[in-house]
Image 1 (tube, rainbow, N blue to C red):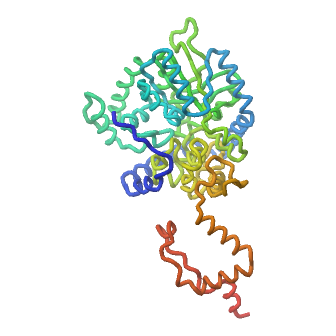
Image 2: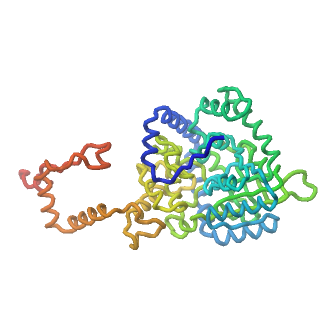
Image 3: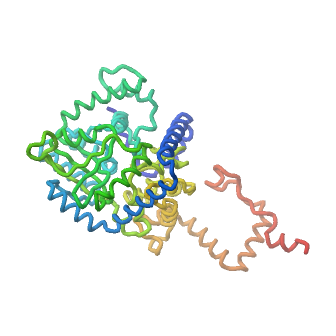
Length: 477
């Protein structure tokens, strides 16, 4: 298996973006995939009134859940514990991995088989396990493909969406022993299934994500299409579920509307093939299921978003990926350009809390603010408003009222501060404004042709030969 590529946050965002823009094949693949997913979503919501009503309900459920989050988390822990599920709390990625590693060492585990879990990607679970000598193997077909290629997922729902069937065929022929090159999609899927079937039988631990955690019943809900989630949570003798603290809802009644929004928004399906509800380990007389079930609840910066009423809306997300599928920027550059676990619009607003604004602020500026993401978000997250807030935070003066996040002011420079300070002085004093605009219009020939990032894709800004006040003065009555 190839060495895993270490993708950094936003340090090289521009360079990665340009690399994709210079690759016509990659751009064509993403554009075609996004068009396909948009069409499938539209077909699932033919009734605009029903869609609006369902989105309103979904948003209300998520807002209610977040407004009552501390109480619901305590209720969830109590009911999970009563059901025999062991609950662990992790403040950050290192703590989450340490908890999982502690469980693995206690049972002398050598192999972990994983269902789809973006939080495990977020905390670097695979790397932590492999560093401890434990194999962590992906069982979701898309995740298996990118793991085999030594890459990170490029989409939260379809991790290998950036790869063509020819690239996957070449990868399988190279990395899977005894496999001949074939571009037949069914044959490729069967190859993957044969490999994975053996891994399920060999694994000591099954790891999964959680789509919804129901507080009143102590139930973990898992949405999937391939059956790998069900296998991960029943075949190995220990099941570890890992999720962010925001995934809790109060009642089972709250799950169906969110489930309907999730599947229809994500993959254009009325329902997924499997909907798993896990409420405890194997009971006496049951034929399958793990001996132990653990839930790791991860903070990892989420309480920073939670503590701000505007930014709290970020945590409403149900990870459908619709904002990515409709984003003109994501469709052009794909997921790897962002350099974060969560790419696209949702990544731009959640990554600053997970990684700090200092390493992720360029993502907030990688948006046209067209509003397409907000128009399709099933739980009505005001993504453009939050992007503007993060832009302001990135430019805020350290210590000011506008600087409230970890890494605020990271985009602020001495030159930029001086320029905007001068701009503020000019535009707040009428006499100074009149004098400045007079000199600018008369000295327009001195305007530089190289104006930094502006002239990389635009013509230079040149003052008009006459100010508006001069034109009005010269105008005949």
